[in-house]
Image (cartoon, rainbow, N blue to C red):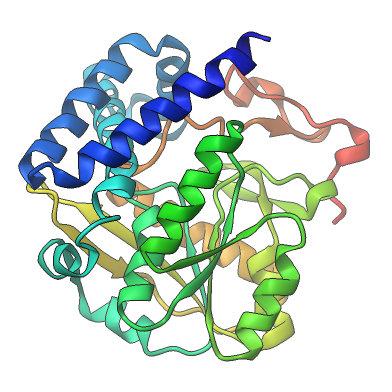
Length: 312
């Protein structure tokens, strides 16, 4: 009941954001993101504890406690800017894209690939990647996870459509993605989410521990022959996004599991270079198997259960 009572206030707040944020100067939006991220880091105790547990797992004694807290705080600020920019780029999109989005040479090489499976994680601004493809003349068909609030979810759908994305629901998404790739189009997947084997995932190593990850990108690549590329967008201190991409992964003579591992390794390397942009508050190491040592996992992890064990 309490959850249902929150739906309307959340929607009204989203309406207010849509009506106000697009008309703010860029410097104000960036300042709001820093302020909001700092506020969330200070008062969101549960998410902060998850972040610090993940940072301890990845960096151990290599970083001090204040250094980990600084990374966590900047991660919250980066996420705040991602949310605000969903609204800010929804108006005057073409002009703002020209002024606040820059592509490096590796990203331009990836853009020339058709068809393409574009992969990213909750790293930098993952939402703006589909906008970039749309503005560059290659609308991206992207899998979108539904929000718990259906009113805000419908608003988010419209915002994504305005900025060049073609969002499809997770349920039955493979059919839409295959159709896009066979038409020499571009599809987008966010692959650092917990997807159990029962849901079509596999366990692969990630920062030294196994995580459950979707095998969709690997399966699509093997089935269609489309190459894959990891793309990331980082905002600098002025709120200007720099797009860069990893090495193009060709599926020739690779299994879907090998491709999934290669993508995960690329994401790990990027996170090591730019840890302040990753969403550390996500429970990435949520599951462990019977063959894993629970002591090595964060406090929030739990056993996946024998019925969910890795099919491999």
